[in-house]
Length: 349
Ligand SMILES: Nc1ncnc2c1ncn2[C@@H]1O[C@H](COP(=O)(O)OP(=O)(O)OP(=O)(O)O)[C@@H](O)[C@H]1O
Image (cartoon, rainbow, N blue to C red):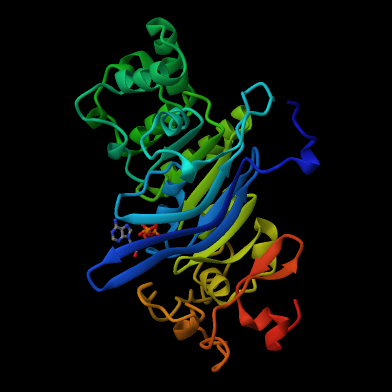
């Protein structure tokens, strides 16, 4: 099969109507409630929202990694290529056996993940080098010497100097920033097509954070991978992403190319997030606002806007009366808000 020209190229991955329900003692939680998005080849999609909105569950679903208690439905179509540009068979990740051969050949090899806390990726019992080599030998080459050379090259690529010495050290001998770099080198050592980065820099101080983000960008350019970047930080989104999906209470409430979203935010929640974001040159008199109230629990929610209680622009009898559909503002900008829904007499997009 041949690849299609860029303009009409299909996304690397398409998530459709993703739902994750969790049975709790006090009811069923709709933790992720009908999420749709595409991740394009070589591009970065940001998934942003407050703690608990369902970002991590969504991103872990891409590797079929959610815990047993999560009842997951919808489709996650992955369109792999063989690394030389030829297309392979599309597959729906959610239809694969959760720990079967097919998903194990994708995890770490074709889709890799890095987390906020690198200690979850590394075992304290083995050296960093051993663990990276192990990943390479599972997915890329059985040859021990070649695997070690790739591991050393990757450690040096992520800016770990004295890599021969570092190779033989244990995770606890690395600083937090270095462990994060080592985890990135392990995640990228098998040339994945997609890197899922879940709050990759939240635990790091600001200088190291900037270095790690810069590193991810440089490696993306070198290897041409796609990135799903999960964060609660709009500053990171602005710096890193091509497109952004804003998530609130299990749903995507706004989605657009990053420049468009910052220039022309529509959803009251997105606007609130922006007002709570520090700006360079924002002036010391300009106070940052926080969004009042807290995110409700997604248990037994009636069909209505989940942001209703916190929204300054809410329309009683409309926003709390039925589920909110997605409205197109333009070809690539959508918003889930009755203020823009023509059928409800909102302002025209
Ligand atoms: N295994 C589980 N059992 C019960 N509830 C869960 C489980 N996993 C996640 N949740 C709940 O589902 C909701 C979404 O969780 P998720 O971790 O995806 O949120 P998040 O947006 O990534 O937040 P954070 O940034 O704090 O991780 C939260 O309310 C969380 O408490």
